[in-house]
Length: 386
Ligand SMILES: Nc1nc2c(ncn2[C@@H]2O[C@H](COP(=O)(O)OP(=O)(O)OP(=O)(O)O)[C@@H](O)[C@H]2O)c(=O)[nH]1
Ligand SMILES: [Mg+2]
Image 1 (cartoon, helix red, strand yellow):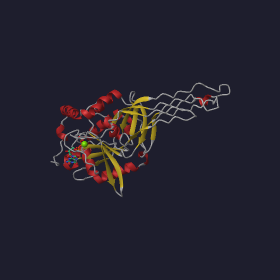
Image 2 (cartoon, helix red, strand yellow):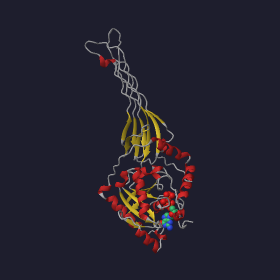
Image 3 (cartoon, helix red, strand yellow):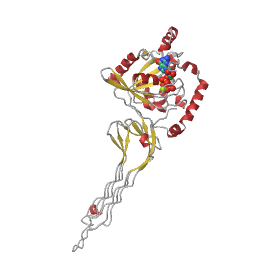
Image 4 (cartoon, helix red, strand yellow):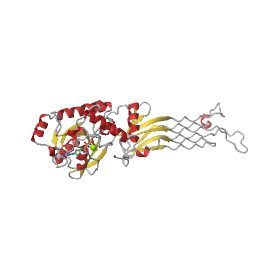
């Protein structure tokens, strides 16, 4: 069983600092009976700030920090001295982190750049001291403003990995194997479905020192949108990819059908996913005979360019890289804007909280579920790795 430190979901309770109170004070000095008001202003409470950090890859460092508080502003003092500003609480997050309201699921913010600061919760303003309120008719105001209260909020941070190419396919389609062949990543590979339980990233080096990033996500099955298999929550990791690489094994009886099932699952998750550039790789071609190839050609979808590959023999891999690079170079694929739909808190909590502790148990449940309705024999590898 794969142990993972890949945390892509955390829920945190945040509270900003409250503003310090303004001071009500009168100047006092020897031989100066009425020194006048001199109460200073209170300091601002600390903000809660999200900051992008390109050296982080997961939200692991936040997993055990369920409460984050900024400090309060100091109170104003005599002689017009200001209170100290509260200390901001900075939450460092990997690029591609999206922040939602923890109670309503509403989208709040997204961190995309290194060093980018987003103020999630503002600290309360400090109150003004009585020095501010002196006027010609009221030269000795006996009041000062209190500081503004703190604000609090539950927030959900979700990581949506930033990769160029995302792999989409049924379990056992050979996604992880492809990633292991084109990059230095070492994902787990096995001939049973749902080997990959968390997204994996690899850097694919291309000609002339160029490279791009590829994301391997867990397999998708029909009904994933309703929670079958590992569900669709991992699809958030391909939301920002420029190109989607679909993978269907050559042994599949009907390639177009499998491809369309995958497409419709993506659409159910977020229709905008279908606006991305797509390529289709027919995998495991080393085990194809003439008849299989003929059948594959017959059932090939017509609206997508395809390439026959084999991660074992290396067939078509260079061509695939060329095709991916061409798509990545296209201007229209460069800027990836996607609207982040609000999340369904109830659904996600049942999925995500369980994922950490009961992962193993769920895995077996999924397998059982799948075995009932699936003929797995056609997905078995040919055992070259034995
Ligand atoms: N013959 C052959 N077998 C392959 C090829 N690529 C993958 N396999 C086998 O197919 C099986 C599944 O491969 P994986 O890479 O784990 O598949 P996956 O798509 O990542 O599967 P999940 O992580 O479960 O979604 C393994 O037994 C691989 O050895 C290939 O090009 N040729
Ligand atoms: Mg895999």
